[in-house]
Image (cartoon, rainbow, N blue to C red):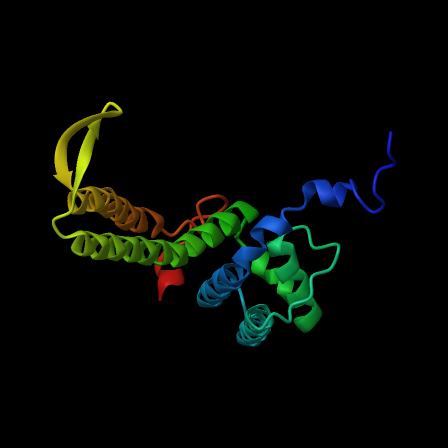
Length: 203
């Protein structure tokens, strides 16, 4: 049997999700910024603590968006990576972001924020596909083609009709994305450990 590759199959490799959830980096920072603001409004953070955390998170976000953020082997997931870097920047006060917030809250919030940013991208791609279908239908003009049913030729149809038959399923998909946006736009922070009034997080 071949020897196992070096530096592989350690517990950190087994538990790490960073290769997947690193795409949630900006959302993780944005969620933490909102949570820090909520803690400040609730009196759990002093003015100087909130300012320090907010400035530190802004620096972390800038590092992510500029591609300068440096991950280290001990970063188990995007949450520990952000926390570790924030602690590097501002010290132990970074740990106060844990107040009243569980990791489950954080994961769900990050993912919902990511979906809210991704859904419009998908919708735009579907709209582009629809526009292409309409363009092809216009180019087809009066061109005829055989219609098919159960893999057998049926009555003649316009090629334009065939192109446009794919338009409406995409329109239904766009409707589903619109419905999904409303379902995703629900604030998940607080219910796992301690209830938090939504107004603390939404301004």
